[in-house]
Image (cartoon, rainbow, N blue to C red; front, side):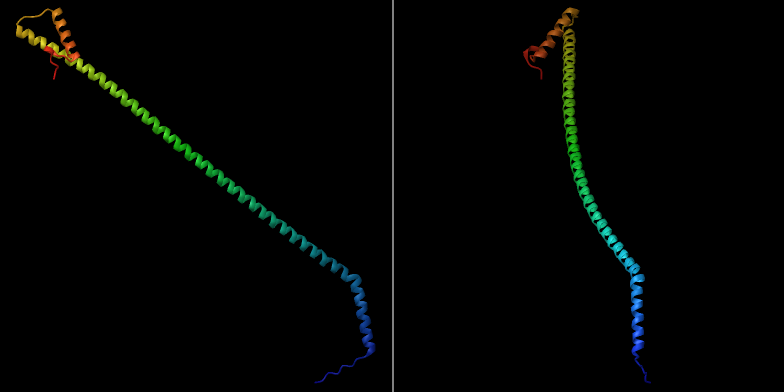
Length: 173
C-alpha cells in the first residue's frame, strides 16, 4: 500500500499561519502562567533545598556541640570519680590510722591495768606470805604476839619483800 501525500502550498501556509497564531496565543496567555508556575516551583525547590541544607548544617553543628558537651561531661565525671576515689582512699587511711591509734591506746590501757592488778596481787601475796610467816613463827615460838608487834613484823617483812631482800637477807625465789 502506498500513501499519496500531496503538498499544497496554500494548505502549508494555512497551517503555518495557524501555528503562528497558536504560538502568539500561547506566548501571550498560556506560557506566562506556565513559566511563572515553573519558576515558582523551581524557587520553592531551591528554597527547600537551601532550608534542608541549613537544617543539615544546624544538625551537624548541634551534633558537634552535643559531642563536645558529652566529652566535657565525661571528663567532669572522671574528675569527680577520681576525686571521690581519692577521698575514699584518704578516708579509709584515716579510719585505719584511727583504728591503729585506738588499738594502741587500748593495749596501753590494758597493759597499765594488768600492771596495776599485778602490783595489787603481788602486794596481797606479800601480805599473805608475811601473815603466814608470822603465824608459823607464833606456832614455832609457842606464844602469841601482840597486835602492835604482829603489825610491825608484817610491815617489816612486806617492806623487805618489796625491796627484794626477802627474809634473812636472801631475795625470794
